[in-house]
Image (cartoon, rainbow, N blue to C red):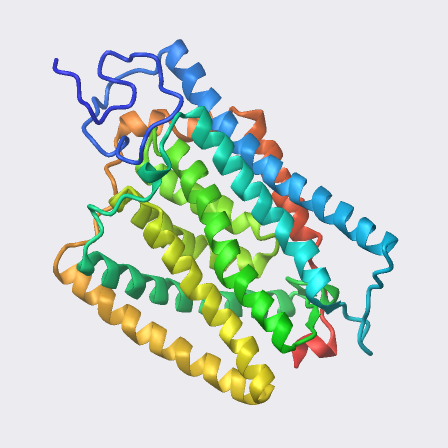
Length: 359
């Protein structure tokens, strides 16, 4: 039988490659093909590397952030709280809290890229990015973002009914809004964080998992991306938009659309803070609701058009893929360690319902 060039393992079940572009995983596979022991070990090694890199990102970011906080305190920095005993987030606090994650994302991406001997240009291909795909992508980003907000409200209501909040009151830090802080917030939240996180979660996690199955990679990388955010509400948002980012990365073989979409939604969040600074909370909330409504309408129209044109098609998934995804993934110790780290982080954010949260 002729070897399928889209098969990362090859029909002859050649040794599993350590790294592949996005294209493998969507071609034809013999559904009856068994998993050889050598193949299983190679796939498991690939999964283990991906999950270990995610663990290093999570734990390393926390450790580095605390080290920076200690150094800041040694040089006279004082943590400030408002009258509700809520942390005031100024520029030094924001840098210490956000920069470590970005640095670890960038470091892990560069290490993974060099280990796979890939050129940087391979991550930013443009030949499969058309105007139609750009419009469709942003329409779906708007839809999944607005749907995630609806799901967040459902979860909040359910948690409040059960007597707890999905986020501790102390975690809802107050921002010391000023022009310098907003400029830094734009640079950090709307530019650097999206670039770093897409390099990590689509450029490393998705790319590694897609060498086995693109469909599996889209959903698994979105789940890891959502869990990484460390609280239940952002987990929902991260998973929903992560599906769109992963799908776009697989379809175009490029990180350009995921990065652009990530910057887009993060800048929208920052724009709410800017409007709060320029006007007041009520005006900012009205703006947020109006834009969210526009997102939903545009997203629904985009979805209808794409469905009418049969333009949405998930990568192929056969018995071949299923034998090589979940059964092998759950046999990795690193998977369970990563899951435990994320769950502990999320559960630690749970808190009691207070009058402030009910407002």
